[in-house]
Length: 81
Image (cartoon, rainbow, N blue to C red):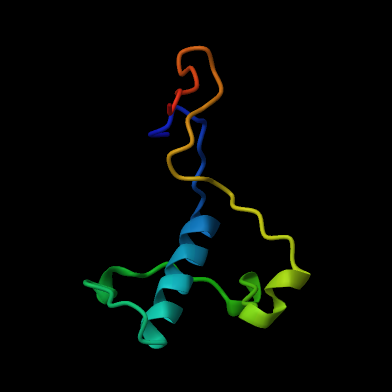
């Protein structure tokens, strides 16, 4: 929504995000400041975790690219010259 795009963020999206955050915390990769506030999580069956060596076998597509501006007329492309 910040980039002028239509966005939806469902409870399922929230559960997946929270579960991934909890996994990253369990693995020691981040610290959750207020872990008691995380109530909505999902089953690990809803998340596919692949190893780095398997990455080439997958076509990974981001649901959203941060900073990409919508392609409407009110946001013309920037010339970076």
